[in-house]
Length: 398
Image (tube, rainbow, N blue to C red):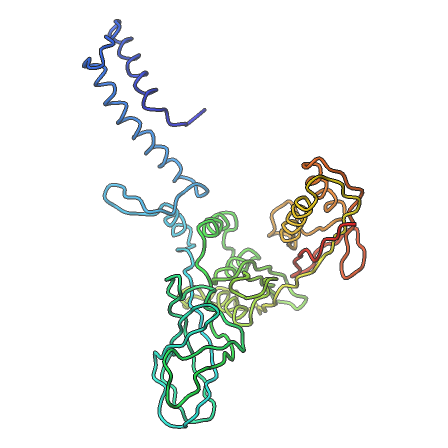
């Protein structure tokens, strides 16, 4: 059964055919014939009804619902947001503004640094302001600053406002009592980009598939992944009775780590999310559960491809590296009772060789073999353990 929207001409021809069948006579071909004008007018209306009906049909399913607002009988709503609110997921996570603790060198120990004083970072183009007034009563004082604007007009929200310890921020306007430059001591709040539509859609689907159960693996996974910038949370039952260990993977943008290693602040955000709901009122974890949060461990695997013969060698080598990068990044631990088959925790030499073969064959080439190693030790298979993720270390062609 096809639900394709017919064209205006197809609808027009169908109306004419129905009229001729009902009247048992041929309608004149004159373009201004009353019945032909009526058929054209009705076909324009019907094609709109077809499209509207098709659009509304797509909103019945989470996978196809749109997040864009639409007006129905005078009421503006977003179908995907309504799905999220219905199942208790809420709205998409908003972007958060980074907050940093900075060290300020005081040249004359007198006066106060006003709240709202602006500072700039030349590398990211973000403007920061101080939160609260700071007394200049020591050789070095600390102040908290928040990202408030950026060159793209994004209000400073998101990972763009994050800075590593040691980064330099400069006062927008020189001040008499302090040094022009200040140094970032630590990051107190991690700036994270807003949740994408597809990530939000997946959260809704996960809520349907993994209903809250008062402390099951799926609950810890969902609670832990709610803070902005958290990509994955892998829960495990510890050897200690009543203890749950969460291994956390963050986005590269929010953590500043290409391996997705979360910051200490992000680990605390995960623990806070497991402890209380979004409003900070209702307790989530079971009363007798002790929860710990740890960063994931990113293991590096090296691949060597031998005997590769193919046209456009450089392009094929690049394609092989891209395919292998995606393969290793997609590997993750298998948690019984939580992970959905097929398993992705096994890394095998045969799997790597098959991936290389797919790329080489698609380019009408040949190769003799592909070997797998980690830490310079050759392996044929490896199963990811608790909190372990994989990445491609290097690809060598011999």
